[in-house]
Image (cartoon, rainbow, N blue to C red):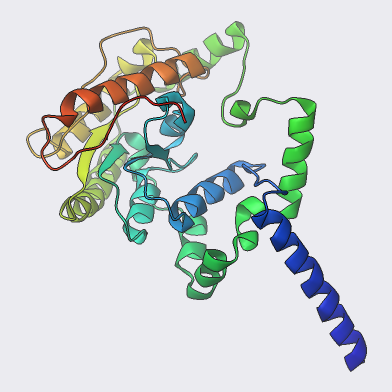
Length: 305
């Protein structure tokens, strides 16, 4: 019985070492995730465990996650926005990582009422799991064999990896989705929602001040959307409330883009060309303000990498 157990352990160890060798050698590529939960976990783990220290970090919800890193044309930007979540999760990740970014862009809108994702933060805070994943990358989410196999099949089929977060819909369906959001936003902001936003804002404000005191330049922003939705009573009241809770004389806000027909595919998330346009807007602002902000000497030259 002991011999059988020893044999099983040796075989398991052999395959574990083999898999580790193939991963380290670059033979087995990492996975981007096969569902939203896994995509979020991979994004968080890559940020926490990476030896690289990104100079500019974006945090937020799925609205910001649409701003793919490649849209920034080689500018050193790391996007750890959490789909289905909020900036609260991102703030927790930035707090947990020892090396802080030089600039942190924080999305602030109605999603701020969503508390940090426990299923993302929990494993990263677990001492034993944290130690194992730090030194043995094969135990990270991106190297799960099933995920790698599914990603391989998707790549073989020629599927566009960008579509993992962006849906392609017909114009008729898009119009119906937008109309539904407009209708839902015609009501005034409820007292309950106002209270939630106010309460969570106090928590976020404290975290922002703590991070700011560590020498990080904070820039608050909201992702633009369909004008017809932005002009509804609910969205207008939400905008004014958040701006009053995070006043411009205390916090730096990204200027609001010039009015334009921003296009979404569902009434909420920007289509890819407009996501790229907003990414350009962010980088243009950072480049223009780089010489005006003391203590920050990031090279924002758009160098292809």
